[in-house]
Length: 231
Image 1 (cartoon, rainbow, N blue to C red):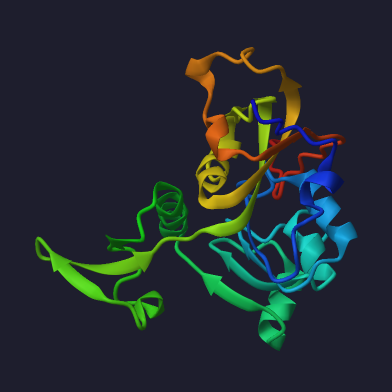
Image 2 (cartoon, helix red, strand yellow):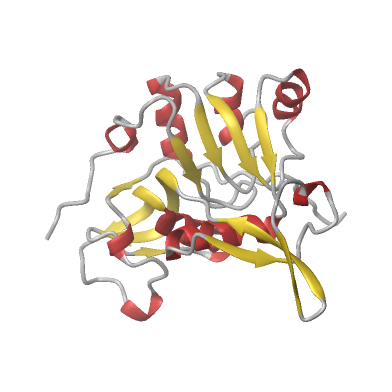
């Protein structure tokens, strides 16, 4: 069996070059690859294209890479929590492709499934539709959207085994599993790493065939973007 286990995040991301296209899993700040992002900050790679549901916040997640100007382009659906993102967008420093959240999810899923394009009604009649092919089905208009794929997918799971099989917990399942399938090289960081064969096959969300590198992460903060509590 191929040995997919690497020592830590630094070793996992060391060959990611400047100009790479990355997918970064997570939903808001839930299930983001915290250790891998920290390691990328240290490598200093530049001109990255980052495909992610969100852009983190100013001092956490992808927001840290925006602050160090390592990101050339963001392909996202929700970016409202990051003031530095807004500043770079308005100043022209950052290229941005805003995509309806369901369309983003399906474009990533299509990339992992080998489906180069699909039709969706989301965005028809808006700026999202500019320059795109449209077609009518059963009296309703649809847009043709293309798949999304990445050079490297960085995902974070609750538990994984040495063969790369992954289990996600709760909201972390929203984007991580489909991004794991859509990267040429998928790097998984996990809270708990167990020997192959120890996970219940019925509980595995991402089969190890999609994962090339895996390591046990450390010191997870698990931030919450907007904490709301009762008085």
